[in-house]
Image 1 (cartoon, rainbow, N blue to C red):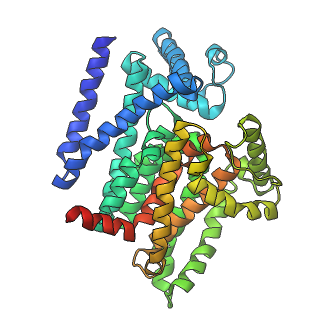
Image 2 (cartoon, rainbow, N blue to C red; image 1 turned 180 degrees about the horizontal axis):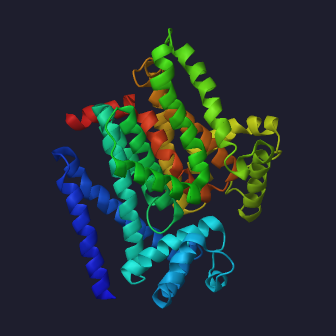
Image 3 (cartoon, rainbow, N blue to C red; image 1 turned 90 degrees about the vertical axis):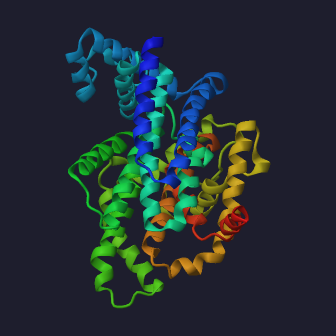
Length: 422
């Protein structure tokens, strides 16, 4: 086992070195600290669930991954068949702890890495953390190419923002899902910048879409309509739009957005209009039953009605972005989350002074897209997942994008830059 772990460690470091070697001088300085932080977060997540939470999905995925790896050693053909079409007709199905589709999908991913690492939980964690890091690193590079002034916000938001990095590391669904989401977004930015894309880019995009759909389909249901609208606006609408004032562009963006959003509402049963509101309320009620008093966002009269959902949306948005507040914490871990939320709130307040500049910015379509994605996903998650602990994990899907949005040309960030330069 030690030999296998050492061999995997050498492979991982060798691949990391090859990526580092290709970077320019500025990014080379950031690469190893960012990678080390990511890998340590993956290890830290495992330790958190082993010694603090004691119960968690991460070791469940690992245990099922080990069971499937044993099946591969015994009958590899049967194992591959189960990977692509596993169902109750397979005996191994009944031995698995997770039988829900999304959880089983993650267990299957874990099983592949178990075969590679000799079923070492910690090596599996390191591999998944590394994949997530590579995707976030690739996205940061694309963001910097849009505007060099975004270098610090992008690096801080996607590589060092504690909650975002921690909850997208290790053996959890978010680790793989965010890697897929970041890569899709990076390719979108390449298209936005009119860069050439190779066949392997599109092959990886299809893989990323498949993975994200199987792990976090609701991330994808918000992301794709936003990205589609942004591209339609840039390449089809804006060239034909006579008046381009922000008060014209914003409503036009909203009109265009309705079509891909309608399409998204048809691709999964939970998003069918007649069921969507019930799903939100049912999830909210289930979480309140298993959450301690004071550890979740309360919507006392929430009903599966449009008026009720809309009336609680402002509270859901505020809570999803900035709660728990520091006076609402009950544990040391919650305090860490609350401190980060406090920083986000201060940055957000400072960013309001630059809203007018954003409306007239040459990148206002991108800024609007980031804002809409962050707001919609935040409201949905805060309404359906009100528990503070779970929400801090799920908001990984948007918090780095929100951070990037509020730190663009932020007065506080600019002062910090000047202070560091002086």
